[in-house]
Image (cartoon, rainbow, N blue to C red; front, side):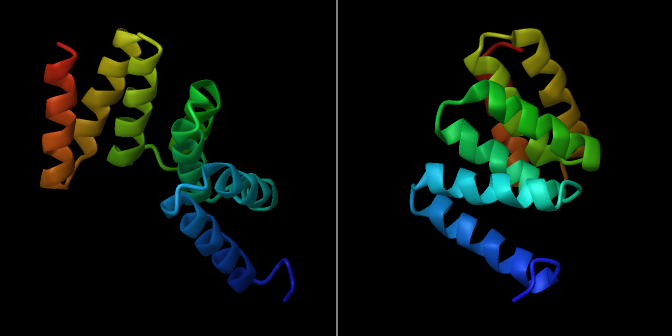
Length: 125
């Protein structure tokens, strides 16, 4: 299979998600890093890379990945939610509050909206 074949990237992404879902975050990050290097404009790759870094407690790299995902899709409530979690882990409440406000603004999912409000209330934002 050729590396410029969309199916190649889809299969690699599915591999990364399988590793992530199995708790093998380092391997997921390796695959996702390769994917964002080859396809830097796919927001899902950056978002998933951010989540993988977040699970590894590599908060700064997670924030960078989430911010790149937001450059590519600036109305993604999930990305803002995870970004806010990262900021809270660094005790950056003002950045977390801004991210949660944008998450609420763009959120269309009631379950996510509840999670956003819980995070805001837990942290008095």
